[in-house]
Every structure is written in structure tokens, then in C-alpha cells.
Amino acid sequence: MKSYRDLIVWQKSMTWVTLVYSLSSSIPESEKFGLISQIRRSSVSIPSNIAEGYGRNYKKDY
Image (cartoon, rainbow, N blue to C red; front, side):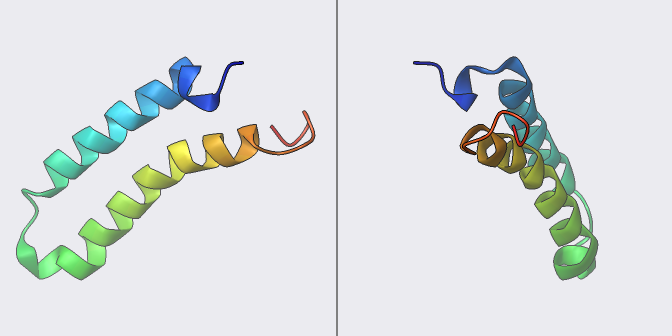
């Protein structure tokens, strides 16, 4: 049975998260709890939403 991890869009979004974390580490520490946090959380929400939608009981939710 396929899972959300088999989806190309999920795989690319995980690559995106890795890139965002890497690039955001170069932002000044003074933004650590402001901009950096917001950027990282928003990037993580992409694969999280894909996985959550995949786990729903209804195709329309997915």
C-alpha cells in the first residue's frame, strides 16, 4: 500500500524543508525567535499538511 512518503510532492517538500533550515541558519541570531522561527514553521507545514490530508478518511479532504 502506498503512503504519503511515496508522493513526489511530499519528497520535494522534505527537500525544501532541509534547504530552508540550511539557509535560515545564516540569518542573524537576533532573528532567531522571530523571522527564522516563522520561516521554518511555514516550511515544515507543507509536508505536514500533505501527510495529514493523506491520512483523512475522505478523498475530498486529501
